[in-house]
Image 1 (cartoon, one colour):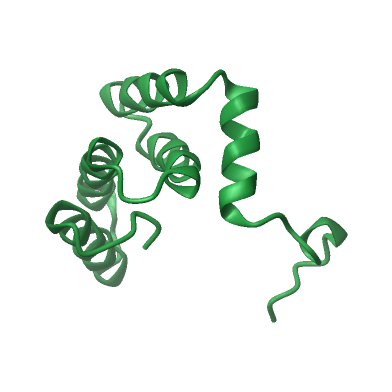
Image 2: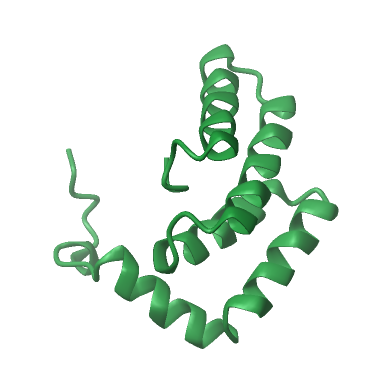
Length: 105
C-alpha cells in the first residue's frame, strides 16, 4: 500500500516546500548543484540523482539540472542488470534531454 508505517509520511510537505527548505539547509542551489556534479564525476550516480531531485523539487525544468540528472540516469543504466530498469533510466534521460519531462519522472 501507500503507507510505509512512518507517521511523518501521513501529511508530508509539498515537494516544492520541502525542496525550498532542503536547499536552504544545504547551502543553496549552487552548493547543491556543485555537489551533484561532484557525485556524477566520482561515480556516485544515485546520490547525484537524489541531489538533482531536491533541486528540481524547488526549481522545476531547470535545463542545467535536467542535463545533469539525465547524465546520471545514463550512468545508472550502464550498471543496471534489469532490462526494465535500464530501459526506464534511459527513457527518463531522453525525456529530460528533450525537455519533455519535469525532471521528477
